[in-house]
Image (cartoon, rainbow, N blue to C red; front, side):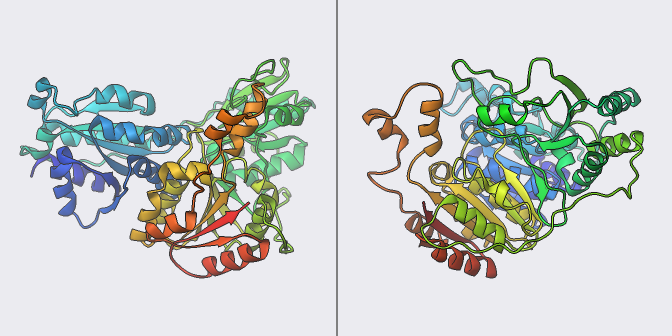
Length: 516
């Protein structure tokens, strides 16, 4: 057995059985080891940002890590944007980064780089394995870190000779998953007393608190005490729809968020951070809350948030049988006429299959999707978490592999979709059950708005040339077909509804270019 074999066995022993990969020469012995392990599903991404984004989507839905396999520092560099997003989503992940053989590094070959320095900003743990005999221990530690609540990124750098050399002792002892910490009794009392004070109080939620169980407990607290619940603006996963507690997010635009939170006197953070503006704007505050707002950091995302919510309910004397209002499924009218983002959201909300997974990178075009889908069929909602665009199509890839029996609906802005267009090829190759909706406004619409928001003026000739996607105009139907995905274009609400109904009624990938 060589080091690569022992690494593969260690991953499998810890229930990591999917590897998203874009390998090169330095990783060939690990590729050969994976070839000897049919239990491991290997998924090729044609760009490293697809690999890391897919691993993120997989872990968000599977609630366990996947492995990635990347080629040296340059491969890691190509995948860093979506590792940044994954870190912000608290996604568990084990990155395997190949490196030159240890004795070859001194020659400074063209692909030599400081891989540890590249990995550090997006990893909770980084280590370079020194030799084949260290692989099992190093990999086990990486996996343990990845499993740590609420989920972390661990990066293991595997020199080529550590992969191909023989191992003298490859004994693997699987470690138990680390348990999440619990809130203190003092913190529970503080939060409960704040709620009892009668001041206008908000529970700001994120992480596991946005799963159906957490939302139901939070809903009971809100209904019994009059506090308001709200979700952080960006979240890894929210369970929504009929039969679940409705929750809105912190609004994106600073003016809207500030107005919405103007009456909050106390904010209790449960897996969330204090809400702040996405960017700085001249003469506008960076935070949305009034300066005298009392911020109570009740439970961080590293803690057992379900336990924290239930303990808070118990401290407030709210029984598990207390009433809570759940969304009820409503029949929406299917709109007609010229297509726009509101009609797209309405149609998807009305026609969404049960237990669908919605992956949202629609950016400005789909920002109001939440408002039209509170009473849709129950579904999971995954979104861009770190602000680095280009995650939507890869995120859908991983989610579909994690949940092959559930329909994935990818809401994708056309501009950010071009960052990781290659993911469509993986949709076709893996025969993934994904309906991709392209919001084709043929521009970076959000940047047109931001040009005004920062006080830089209205787009002139040069700015327009940098912010519009015309001359030539993108043809997503042709692009999708070139990647092996069937596709069609919709210009009216009627056409979109017909295409969406057909795409959700069948298995396999399909793309709708929605002209808005």
